[in-house]
Image (cartoon, rainbow, N blue to C red; front, top):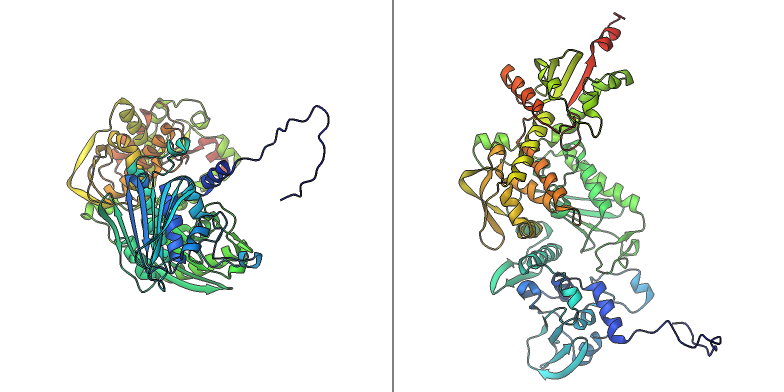
Length: 592
């Protein structure tokens, strides 16, 4: 704090405009930086339990944590005086000096968690060290310590938090439904549980057991508990002072967002775009662009070479040498993935469903390179048969497509056509994707996409972020043709799919649509719906390698010609058609 001096104010400036805020206001502002929602409370209290060397942690929540949260552990506990001091801001047992701050090995270190939670709730703490026969009970309301008294309790600490944000109604109104908040809590607990396999975890939600994880012998066994039926491969390696352990999915199990990819540094769950990119790059061309593997990656690095004090919720770290970390992660993963190819796990369903569920992503990059062969010169690009179609803002001329005559199929991917002005090459997948997208858009805007019932409802276990997506987008999903029913704590039954896309894998189709709907918070819902419909169209469209007879080729061209607002690209921006004019062809073969 700056040293105060008696400096007189100039005449006429006696009224101060800068004021010191009251401690009660300061506490609530600070609490808002650490505690955003019930999941933040669970995270901070559970991290305290982990740092207290707990072997068993039990979490109980009601009303999505808004009504009450209880976290009980069998850790070292606190004596009466320690418990009182722990309620003061920046009071902690985990660091004592600046040097300690530069090599942090605990999850907590700022001394902000308990006072921040206490400032915005009604809190009770029961705690007892193992070497004492009596514990203490502390009652705190809105940051004010109301009482401290002796109390008989088991060794360890139990913290009860009720009426979160009772004194901050502006913050409380931004919370979501109890189910959505519970989904956030579930995500937090899964990430923490994966980082500490030696701890037994239990979560009781609304009076029912929602999570039960026994102690695991190591990271890999715990990963099998957390991800259950998801087929993952174990990877381990060390490079340049970086030790890596990972469990990752095969490319065909990729997810449209990175929400199912858990990252850890020295046991701390973090978010880091650089690490995500390093993982993606290690897959090379086998991972479709914009897709992410499911799984977890844990790094162990010298604590002095990372800075964990860069984010209010401690969700990010700063590496002293990010390039070295990126390179090390990439090399370890790439070495494993290139020498030990994934063996794809067979998708659920019959043979027809298996064939339909193969992901197109692996062929998209390959097709893009091959299509590029048709744009070898500026003259070719200038001579596009559908030049007007490719210009933004202009409508298609359906008669142009109707005038094309298919000659044949090349590589099971392209339809070669003869037109009045030249030879046109149609990307069959991109064309069919654009047609289906237009049909889905029209059906959705008219009310609801026609649906087809599955022979038997498909039982799916969902991740917390997916459950939250269902909670928020139930009506939209129904209009898209997905009838779903809740089934247990973390599962649903998928009963119908869009009839237009019935040849697709039901699970892949549903998960892709759900991920797109929730992938970009803050954007208009209409944009999210169009992205979801585009992804659904991609899953249901003709695939690279699908053989088309003459009639089917003609039908595809006819369908394209009937799309009114056709831009010459698929919904994801790839060109549908390329053309070599007869004059360009004559020049190339020396006839001009």
